[in-house]
Length: 370
Image (cartoon, rainbow, N blue to C red):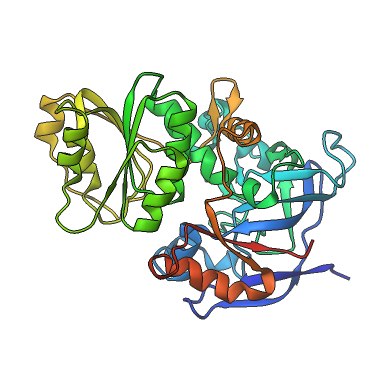
C-alpha cells in the first residue's frame, strides 16, 4: 500500500483555483536520496507566477499534479543504507537544484562536471518546481532530496531562516560574479527578498557604501534593516539615476546589482548609475526582450553580467557559503519573514504573498506541524 502525506496539491489550474490540501503519495527513499520531513516553506515569487498562469507553459502536463515549494527546511526522516553523513533527526536546509550527477545522467554534461549544475545542459531538476520532473516540494509534508543537497543547520538557526537560504545563495552567486570588494560602492535595484539579501551580502563582503531602491515604504524599511546606507523610495517624480549620481558626487557606483526584472527599464537605469568601466549584475527575470541604451553602455565601457540562481564558487558551494553567513549572524532573515501561517491556512498565506503592496509582505512562510 502506498504511503501518503498531507500536501497542497496543484493540478495546473490558475489561482485561486488549482490548489487543494489533500493526501498525496509520500516519496520513498532510494540510494543516495534522503526523506526530509518539511518544517517551513517559503512562498517564492516564481511559485506565484506558476499559479497565476504567467509561466504555466513551462510545466509539462506529465508532471502534474505537483507539490510546489523550493524554499524549504526540515528534519531528516529516513536515510538509505548508503548515506552515512546524515541521520534521522538532523535539522537540514534543502538545496533544491539537482543536475546530471545527482540524477545519474551519464555522461555528465560539461557545466555539471565543472560544478555549474545550475545551467545543466539536460535541464535542471528542482525540488518543488516540476519543469523537468516532479520532486515534491515544501508545500508537502515530505520531500525527497539527494544527500549532497542537504546542509545541516545549527539549533540556533530557525527553520524559517533556513528555508530562505535558497534566496541568500542567489546573492552569494551574484557577488561572486560581480566581484565587489571592500572599499567599493554599489546599488541594489529592488528591495524585495532577493534585494534585501543582496544588500546583506554586500555589507558582509565589506562594500563601503550600499544604496538601494524600493517600490514601497515597507521595503525601504527592510532595506535599512539590511544595512543600506541610503534608500531611494520610488514614488512621485523620483529619478533614481539622478539620486545615485548625487550620492556619489556625479561619479556613479562601481557595481549595480539588479533584482527587479519583469517589464521594467531597470537595466537602462543600471547602466547610467555605473561609473566609467563599472559593472551591472543582472539577477531579475525579465519578460522577454527589453530595450537598452547600447551607445551609453559602449562609451562608458559598462560591463553587463548575468547571474542565474547559484551553484559553486571556487571549491565551495554557494549554498554552503550562504549557510555560513546565516549561522555567523552576518545575514539575518528574522525581519525578512513578515507573515507566518500554519499549513492549514495555506490559502491565506498565498493570498498574502500575492498582495504584497496591501499586506506589506516580504516573504510569507508556511509551517508544518512540528
